[in-house]
Image (tube, rainbow, N blue to C red; front, side, top):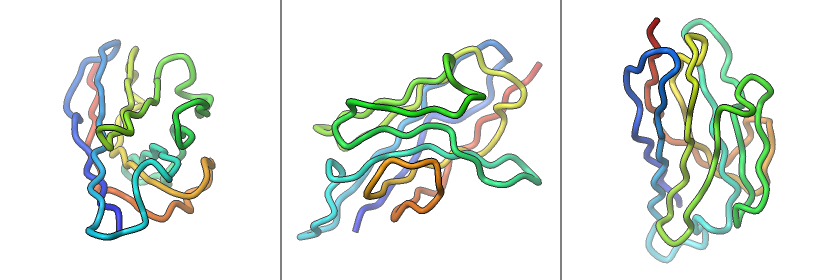
Length: 126
């Protein structure tokens, strides 16, 4: 078992920055350790489908981003701290959503990750 908890959301003005964190807790005697999983961030705005934001490989050597956030968002991870991050810069009104962290066997844009957090809310104001 792997438990994911997001933090760092909040209200920010357009053009501002936020850094989200995804802290993973490993179950006792579990074979599912954080460092064995790719990590992704998804988001869901009210009335919209959940959409892919970014994903990073097991050791953080490679990342992939949705076109809508490329150049503004950066995904990273620290396996020693069992934590992944999403640095969000130049935030836009359309970035307002609930952001979810997910962990799975392979980095993919599809939402078929094994573990999910409860999400953290990001609101961007004008």
